[in-house]
Length: 296
Image (tube, rainbow, N blue to C red; front, side, top):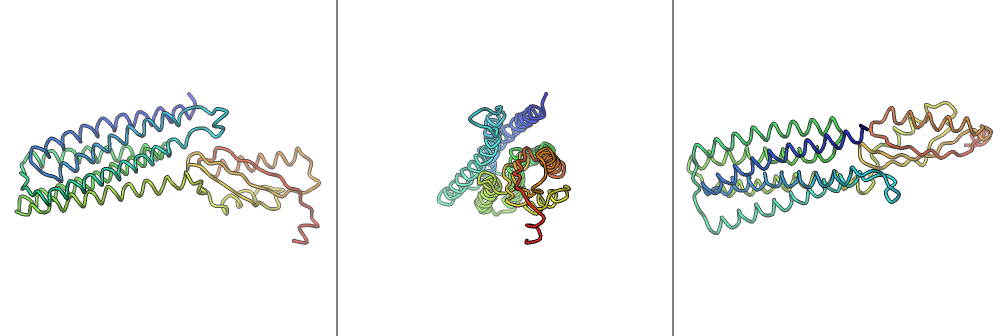
């Protein structure tokens, strides 16, 4: 099995496992939220549904991204995974809007939610599940270098923060401050929107071909190769685990083609060795003389 096949198979497995847990958590919160009339617990349940929905978006994105290179996509399909991460951000913004809307409706139609021992038990249990899901997904995302898993773990992390605030709200309601139920719902909406903004910002940079590697780092590696007089017009693009680099090097004008080709190969191997995620390197060779060097 190739590295790419193993990568996509593992990412899909993680997403399927996490999706099942997210929908189970969402169902528990929504049932308790509707039974007790707590808008903050219900909002948290919708947030958990968005976690499961983001897993579905991720699975679709990974399915597209795992397609092999074809004539119409010579660089592969990996950016579909990045697009899926942007889709997760869109879902977060939508959920944030809906949570805020429900909080506004509760202001005009106030009701005192019921807080029971079962409410606390469900929130504590679902928080424990969220902690496990977040740690597992983040660890797998870092190990595999998967944007979709790392982005999704942030989504789950936001859910954990939200659940903590909801738990505090339940305590406040028991102490006679039901207004905090609505206030917390607005706080929940803010956390969800912020998580969406972070995911969007990170992945839009990739779609806009932001350089994932600094020119200085590439130039330093190139100039360590014997025979290279200069390295310039350096460009890099792609995802952190799928980087493409092209650059120009100056070589002695009298150098034969075989020597020049060997130097270009050493540059490519050096960049792939020192910079994680480099998939392809294109080296453009330009002639250079000692006289030109003296003039420079």
